Length: 623
Image (cartoon, rainbow, N blue to C red; front, side, top):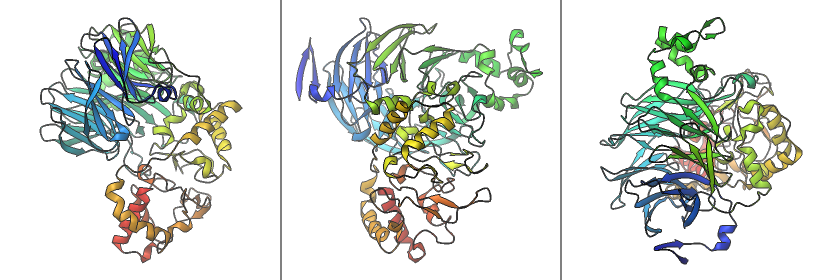
């Protein structure tokens, strides 16, 4: 531990300078002091909060944060900063004046986002590891309750009166065979301390992450991916694979009013990350990690259009031979649902404008107190972009530290998250393989073996050890799988060097143990014995990668398949890769082993008691 003095401020740095030098700079979130003089930037890979002088545009110092920092909340007096520490299952409380961590608050596993309610003295924390929101007494650090939500809560927004929380759930929860499958938004009543509504986003919605609530607390705005998984992957240029959306939610009613698309007709707005709004609630700013841009949205005008207030200039614009979507809504409010399929709505109404963010991979956003400047955390550039909030012009960029030349793995990671490497920028690799190369919970029809037989997205963790690849095992090695995957889904031919970099990135992905393992430990120990013995699961799922790399018919074929032979899936990280089977028909491991295996083709499960099946499941979930 090294103590450094900067003027009158003592900053504790808990790691050596050599350790800092080993990390890239990856700003993920940003907060602004109440006087607008200071920026606090969360640097995920360097494991710290960087303090920037907002006026001089330079770095002042940094404070080390343990366990992968993921989210920030700043007190209204600017004296205390709260940091979610995903891998430490806790919140770090930072004294701004002293530049030191004064307390560690234990919360649920994998905390990633925070919201501070100062009137009631509570801190709310989204825990992705067990799908809960922790309610914490901010003064004492006592955890009051963990509120169950839908799946992988990724953000927390709170109404001005602190009566409601809006929590986007990152991934959908349900069977892949459900044509309405979509991520949801949880509404939490803070007085009752419970979830009171689940607002389903349009079918195919994933990566519901950014949220902002208007000043009156009536409307919440959530950004997300909108995947067209019910169609074969054929016409990328028509937006029939991925589009990117802003959903408007009536907080009190717990209902979705509308979903509008952020794309252009021939250009995607891939991978929206964060959204912030103006004090009057009339303007939104949205970061797009995949295309390195920020959208400015006239949300006040959009609400007017939704109410049927259509100007003559807009009304005269046609959609082919028929009235445009806004005129149709004016005449028939049921047409609001069609906004989720209309790539021209925001552009014909001149309610959206996109601007460069000043660097690759924009994520977190913050407005200056005077609302003149928008600060953008550019993850891969290692900078904060400073934009004019009115016209989107880039004013400057501020480095959070020295950024090193990327190695093959980092280059591959950048490519993986870069939708500008796709035809018309419709998606990045990460648009399907969310959460560092894992899954989006949707089945996609790639037409390798006919149509109407979508396959669940497979995690890329350990892919260099588990060839052959895809559900039908048609790709003999990871390099060919990556190359053909880019060609088939991005409609471009990648350079050989790019494929090498993507391969290096996938090889860098490492599995994470189930954060709930302590609760599973005893049952998992019994389940391991069954897995390797009586149940005979290890015959097809041998350690260490828990696949024998062979194909089998386990009774899950359909009439739309040429045969029922599917690759043995790895069980590593099975706890986070639901739904299960090639088409995602099973929501849980228990469903997979009981409801969807009537012929008992998975090992010797017919010989197990209900308790033994539960123990076996506990072991699988521990891998």
